[in-house]
Structures are given as structure tokens and as C-alpha cells.
Length: 350
Image 1 (cartoon, rainbow, N blue to C red):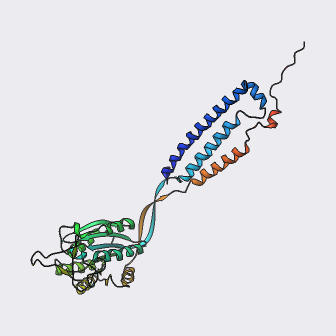
Image 2 (image 1 turned 180 degrees about the vertical axis):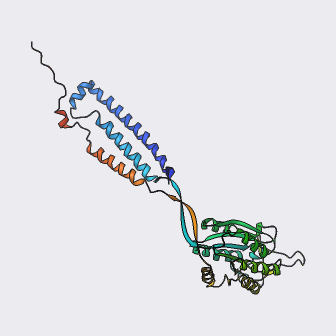
Image 3 (image 1 turned 30 degrees about the horizontal axis):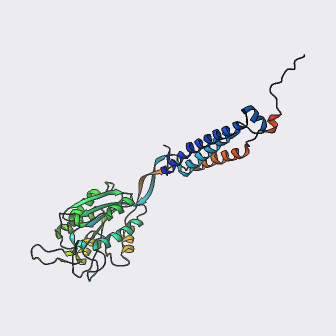
């Protein structure tokens, strides 16, 4: 399949007929002016070196060269083909807490970015380090949902990660057990592939603490390493809402205060044979990366689309050759051709 990287540049091809039309108009205007000096045969005798055929040939060569240059500038490709590559890696699923408490500031004094933003920034950097691994994305609050299945498309993973917004989720809660269960079903069936689940949460007000511990244990038995990233501060803060308001407890009518439950988050990670890190710590990303390196890597086959070789040099060389030929060809007649006589006049005797 033949294609161009910059299709919009092909609009410059409209210059070709425009230049050709200007040339024809100029030739016609020149012819009319010459006719003022006499008949065409008489005028031709006054310009014995002027060639009738070379100027059209030269303009055709010039227009063809310009066409080739436009094609080259549009960066032609020979097409796209599917290729497969095998590299060693693991499968990583990231489960992001999207409960309302994740809107709270990450700082102890109610300052700084939100817990959600703090977690996203860390996970974006982590995804950048997943060179040969596959990554999936789950979001959970009252229920757990798959945003993107396990894939090697890191660009899409980061795009969907940034799209998570707790204000758009109506069914609130902190259903970590549901996220773990969904992750187990989302991994591939290949038992030889190393698997890791990263849960980013403030671990507050779990729907079922016992169920979470049981789910973490079950995941570890299936060979899934469960790591937990805590976001926020252990100091309670209010949850801001759009418009300068705060989240209100429907029972008491007082502003909701939320704090990171590090002890519970660490216990979940322990049950899942993983580690707990606080996203606010400078070494959190390095510690999490080192922990993922302990997961057994397996040869993973990845399909991707690869472009054929660039074809623009071919068009450049054709344009260069046409320009050289155009320069060599002069508008006057060739003297050596003028000496050649193809037909001889027979002399008649009187």
C-alpha cells in the first residue's frame, strides 16, 4: 500500500497546471508580438538559432522535476506491514481508586495536588519504565471496571489513566476486593507469564476489609504479586468539590474528613506478597520498580505495525536527474545537428 506521511503537501501539485497555463499564455503572447514583424517564416529566418521544440521540452522537464520534489516533500512510504517481536516481560494491571476521597489534597495541611493526581503522576512515570511489559488498567469505587485490557500500547494506557475522574462515578465506595477479582480475570491464562497487580488507593472505608484480605491471599496463591501505592496523608483533611464547596456527610451534615490508612494498605500488600509504598516518598517509584523486577519475566510476543523503507530519496534523485537534463538542453538549435542533411535536393538541368 502506497501512502504519504504529509498528504496536505500534495496540494502543491496544483501549481503544476497553473505554471503550465502561464507558460502557454506567455508563448502565445510572444507569438503574437513576433507576428507584428512579419510572417512566421520570415521571422524564423531572422532567428535561425532559435529552436521551436526545445522550450516546450524544457518546461515539461521543469514541471516533472517540480512534481517529483512535491512528492518527495510529502514523504512517500511503501506501505505498512504487521511485524511481530518477542521480548521478555511481565503483565502488569493497575487498579486505581476513584472514590470521592481521592479528590482530597495529598498534603497534610490540605494543600498540594489531589490524591488522584499524585497517584497518576507516579503511575505515568512507572509506565514509562515498562519497556517490554504489558499493562492493563482498572478503575474502582463501589464497583470495579476495566478501562483498558492488558496491552503493550503504553500511550493508550496513559491516556485512559489521565481520564479517570471520581466526580463521574455515581456508585461510590472502596471496593478493592472487586478490583482484585476483576484483575485476576483480566490477566492472560498463560501460567508461565509473570503477573503483578498495583493498587493505588488511600485504603479508607473499605467496603469489606475481610474480603479484601481474602482476595489478596487468593491472588498471591495464583502467582499474582499485589503491590499497593498509598496516596495522601495520614492526617485527616476535607474533600473539596467543584465550586469551592466540600463533600458533606449526608448523615451528620458535617464536612467529610478523610485520611490515608497506611496500616491497612500495608496489610493488603503483605497478604498479596508484595510491598507498600507511599507515593509521596522520593524512593517510592524506585522501590516499586525493583519489586516488579522480582517477578519472573517470560518471552512475550508483541504485534506492531512497521513502516516500509522511506521512498522520498527515489523522487529526489529523479528530480535531480530531470533538472540536470533541463540545464544541459539549450533553447537554441544544436550546431552539429544543423549540419546534418537528411534530404538532398536534386538539381534539375536547364
